[in-house]
Image (cartoon, rainbow, N blue to C red; front, top):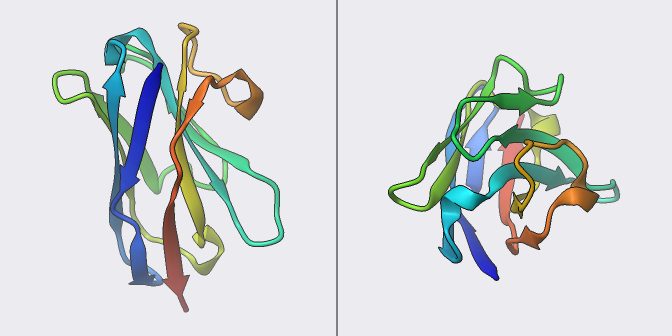
Length: 124
């Protein structure tokens, strides 16, 4: 079992930056690939970014590529999402998730554990 707690959300103006953190507890953090997903009001949850257990490989949704960076620190049991040049369409609840598989997958159904989310609001 893995428990995930997101933090770092808030209100920011368009063009600004935020860094989300997701702290994991329970089983060995480095056993898991990690992902970030988001869900905007009235929309389905969508993939944002993923990272393999080693941090060697990362994957991004086209909508955030070049603006967001996913990283992890296995010594701190934490995964991060650095978000730059934020846009109003980035407004959503952001969730981190842990995948027991070795691949960093882009589909939510493959992830085994989820946090409760943190709200990011980008004003225009």
